Image 1 (cartoon, one colour):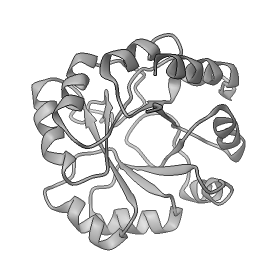
Image 2 (cartoon, helix red, strand yellow):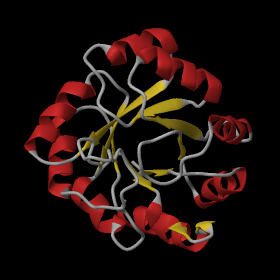
Image 3 (tube, one colour):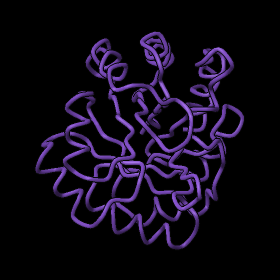
Amino acid sequence: MTTRIKVCCIETPAEAGLARKEGADVLGLVSSMPSGPGVISEDEIASIVATTPRGTETYLLTSLTHPDDIAHQHNRCATTGIQLCDRLPPGIHRRLRDVLGGVTLVQVIHVTGDASVHEAVRVSREVDFLLLDSGRPNAPTRELGGTGRIHDWEVSRRIRESVDTPVFLAGGLTPENVGRAVETVRPYGVDVCSGVRGPAGLDGARLHAFVGAVRAAG
């Protein structure tokens, strides 16, 4: 199966178009976060979603944890899926299912060690996808993604082998290392933000190289 590619931190319709042209299957749109890159307003997210053709998935990245707040935010942005960047209390995923129906739910697991494996197994039954990232939710300034850091891919491989839910791999991926990451973890998909961005925004040459490396490894 072809490894899916999610390009995150999309900031404009032009970046969305470039990502689609280079082969992105999913666009990540970042709402308010305690830290990290790529944050845009909900109006900007809705505008990008409105210009995205059918067939390309769009994920709203949210740091919210109350189901009503998440549902209202999703209704304003109208993405095809929601990427839940923080841990949620027990039962919240089920309540989101009830409220939002067929919206894709993606739970981020910030990979640190054995505890992350146990967390992933527990949560995997409640969502459509897991996304394995390198944040630090308990840091003084909370990090919920976009750190540009690599975590231990062997732990991510263990998570992938321990769950039936498809897994996206994120965290410090670049055109130079994503081939090794795919070969090590064998994820359903990969997620990239800072690894394909430059001073002027999304870098088409780096994104092209990233996609090529993923396809070669897959």
